[in-house]
Image (cartoon, rainbow, N blue to C red; front, side, top):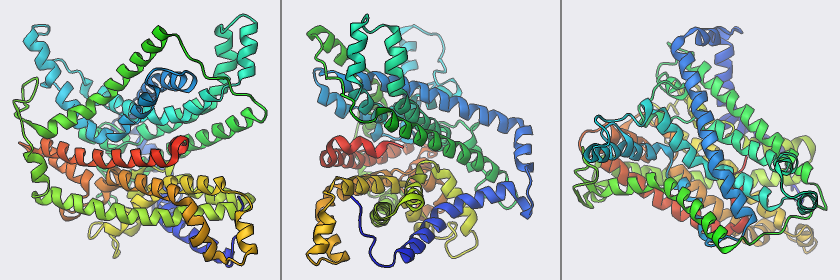
Length: 558
């Protein structure tokens, strides 16, 4: 559907470009300028110093290893799910498809609390093994923190890769499959020469997104107390930029990795579209035998159960009393949920997050609708520019945007050291624009091509068409994207940790981090706060999935 741009197209371009420029492009450009032009003169000195610093070299190597490990784990989980649920009519298939979204409910940041309780040196697993006499001393299952981070990020991100893969498995070329069967069946050559080339664009595109997400994650290493990673090293310098500009170099490295991964993802996605072409007959779904089907469903169910363990552990911690040096809690209580609404930090953080996330929804629906219209009303360069701006936040980790805001607005009335609420709203909004844009653009493209022209012929002006035709027809897409923007903004980590510098303005995730440093019931309160976030996110995902149906997975692709 191509929309009439209406009046003032150049004015719209100028205004929309200015908004996106100030709050998305300029912060990233400022970081690049400070990294490559310290003191106003081009220099690679900061990067040279980073390469010569053994601590930063180790941090870079660790970040790469974590990203590779999380990508490998996510791939091992996503491929069987996509292959089996995309091609076969398995028992409980719909339940398994819904279960794939469970890991999205608990960000690795919150899951770190549960993993430390279960796998820490004095966690439940070691206590059980010591009491059973299977070990003589506690085992460091987390290996200093890195294995736990890889586990959490791999479990959390494999649904992203699954969504990227499942449609490709469902659309495999049926003619190629039948030809392979005629010439000897599905041998290794079939998987290597036919299957892998068909799914590799989606597979590699999803892997690129998982790698970038894992490489730039700040919250999980922070809670796992694993400091030798690039995001943590940059975070430690956020309040010291005037005296130590190394933070600009570190965030530039993360930004370049993010842009590179996004470019790879987009290039591969376009390659997949060209590869599929027209006239390809998708292979028919298959119904396996009873034993094979039950076995496959049981295997997938076991994997989902493993992914659910951190979620279950957080829920138990939220009700647990006396869970220290013991395999299980001594008793259970609801007092931590009661405290959430009486403790000054938790009560304030819930109110702040609700307020900020609601405003972020309004920002994203307005900008997402505007960007979608501009894409549909434009051609060539302008269409590509608006789509790039709308999807660019996928390539810009939250720490980069927050870091840029701190550097850009320091010393002004918007300085986050004072009142960060406006910048938090804009940071949440910029980070989640892809959800609103992709959903609304999909909705517009699903409308009949002649509907806008017919309305114009009948005398409907621009706003008349918007209010009387477009918005009523696009309501499910607006609601779905708005719910996801709200829920994921509630649990935004990097922007909250960096921009909310004063206790009075802590959102939920900053409050959770603060509580984990508190002795006594701090972890329990943080777990209860995480449960509140999970309930909100679960409801949003369920409703959005009901509204969008098969198109829901499109919102998580790069």
